[in-house]
Length: 593
Image (cartoon, rainbow, N blue to C red; front, side, top):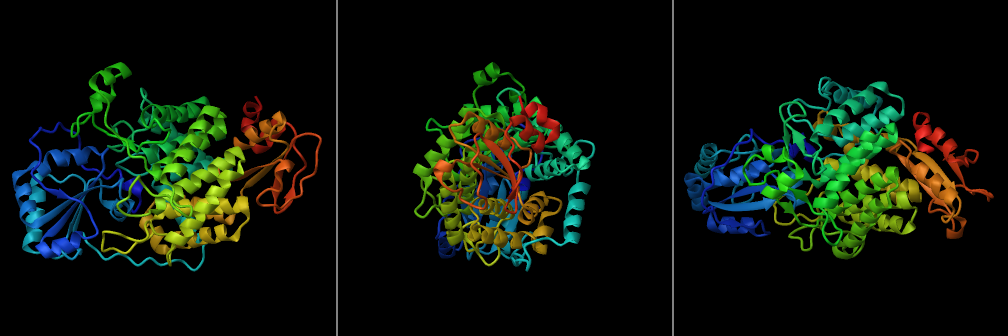
């Protein structure tokens, strides 16, 4: 399953307590541009240990496998051993997302892949593998040629494709527990969003899947500190692995906020605000930027189920699992987007302030010339698409919830940087150029889903054809048969992107001064619409025409909202209650309060 979110959950085995041993004798080296030049000069194979700071089984492998005498001997004799944190290198992470974490990759001295192994490798199998490729350094069965990346002729799905993809998603649904798949259960935000969108349109079966999954998925919320654990094993929601990773925090914060917008039941807002509380307490730097993740283990390599069963005081008495304090642009963009979605439904100015503070920090500390963003303070490679894309999406969402045009300007500048830097014949690549690897850059599916949705929405707000062309280019990669086949049942994101690409968003314009309390109330209500794909604008005549000027709105003696489609608008709606009723009758009474 070529999807980073699925790969994150492909970790082997069950927990146990690792026996502590002396420091490893392996001499780890960096993954640099010249790694294979050095390997050829020294006639050595290359071992890449690709892991994550939050990963329990990475710690176990470090404590057990890489302490084993025979493993250490074989590596010292014939290998250059390279250790990389996949959070630091999105290019390597995306290339090997199907194999970790940890992922173990062996290379010939010229950079040719020899073996790719997923998850924890005990000492004996590891030593056998190392010796086998010393004896015969030819590619094993785990190495296959990369399939060519071919874009589709059309940017949309045929009806038969769309139906087959929906069937794949529905047939993979776990009717007993909720969620998708059989072994690992987690809050798959694209699949849930697809079902929530269906529920807005009146699809009863989709609403049932969304509600059951979110209800049972709440078991992955930490009841003490807030935040969401990454996933559960054993085919249910009762066996969590305890790492807390920013993509899961940010995207599930967003999904719970969208569930609240649809159902207006307090449990969904409480769930979203619990994730926000965790971000505030554990993953916010003194500057207001966001850290990357928190470890699954209190003691690295030791399963922490008992620890996470304790209350706050008991946990703190024992200590707090390590927080990865890297400040990546990607993780900040994701967090800002999640907070903006929460602000749209709870109107808490402190939430918006946190989002804008992180955005300002990232602009000042991670921006590149021309509108893009680097990953970290100093990058060993890159730039990476993920950083600029996450920040562009965040800027657009900040514009949506504030109607402040400076954020739209930043979104456009970053989109232009993405077009210049990452566009390929098919889709948009993870990195340009590729440094330190012999591999050609290639597009990653989730990034292109996000890019297609972002640029399509950007086009809706600006009317500029360049943004629409970017969305179309990404869509032609996403709807190609090879891309669809690579996803299995995880096609929710492609279906969402294609539906948004082929339909107009819900379009609501508020007309009135931004200092007018009635206009502010209408704008707040419009933001709470359960439609995920929407264009909410605020026309204050003193600011001049809207960025996408399609309608000449009348001068009215009072604030009003207009629903507009294809250049035509409804009669003005002047009361919050009337606007809420038009947005979603089931929640009109609650929205009007």
